[in-house]
Length: 198
Image (cartoon, rainbow, N blue to C red; front, side, top):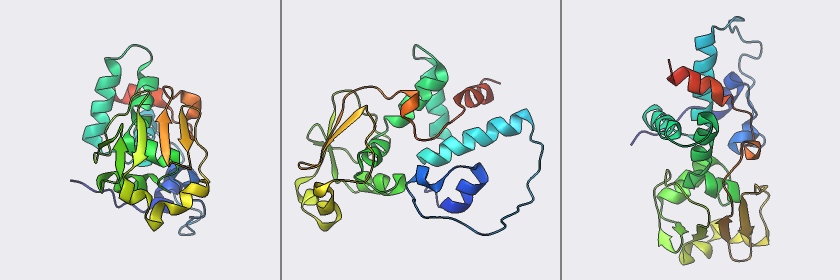
């Protein structure tokens, strides 16, 4: 299994996004502040940059990301919005959105280590796609651990309107399909669709 070990602050700076999008509130880099970036970027270069940015934010590698595009093209509606919806409904992203993981990388590790239950069943696949009505909980033993004990007093994460979170029971529910405005950054999905439809 491939693991993304790219430095977060430097990649955020190159993609011109806030590290807060990745869950890192106070991370920054001072290396090469002026930079020597090319001023003019071709249309292909801009599309490639946008694709790389969205892949980086969600922690998805190329092969899987392309599969999301193919799946989105076969769904009804706008391909870009469908693709964003598929990425938002990944289990690791939902765990991050509920505040059970401080970052998407931490949420991915929480899922793969078997701490998460979906509708009472163990799911340790970060790319598992949740559906409306699914209930996400912690394993009983995990809920009592120090790692998650502080969450019972409440989490600092802002839960999007398509999810509900019961802090007392550490239980999240998918109540709706995520909309484009629920995403905490502004991806240009049309550029990604144009990139793949060449």
